[in-house]
Length: 276
Image (cartoon, rainbow, N blue to C red):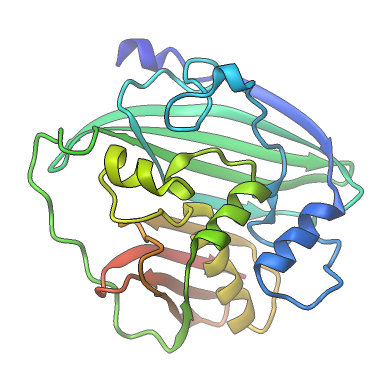
């Protein structure tokens, strides 16, 4: 852990022009009628500042080899654990923007399912107009399937008091298109053989940021389309492409709502809070 903690403070910056093509692809995945807006929607920033690791620097899971920007955590399974976003100003197609990413913390924990290492990365996105977005992204690394030191815990059940509900039917094409749009090489999202044999999953894994994006869209639509100010979400259990899942939520007050993802067995997959 002392070696991993040396990565705290590690920082990289990327600059690029925000292009309309990704916004068109995003609208298509979300089944929207065209033409797509030139404003980057909540969650749309994950389509930009993408990793461009050389093919020779890709690890067995499809991610870039660790030890460059991210610390060299030896645990093989990597998942998106959650995050916190704050929206300050719109980001538009044609803008030249810069993203600065910083390793904020590296923490090891021992859970019922074995050893876990949490890495939190802070991102700031700026354009000529100033700060557009700040984000804290939580990554969790876990032991290999079948090598956990503890017992399997029963999943927490999702709330049952939601007044909004939407059903989503995931399939390999949706997951492949989102992986392509975000240049995400993680094999758990498109390589079924790898999921079954290497990770021990029952199917392809629905992307954590895709679930977060769907929840942000639900919150914005149900709160009269108002601009989203803050969004905080935590992933509890994975969602697979083997069955439909449900987006649900309810208002907490005039400026805040709770939204969550309920899995096919009633399990809580993602829980989030949106502020307007």
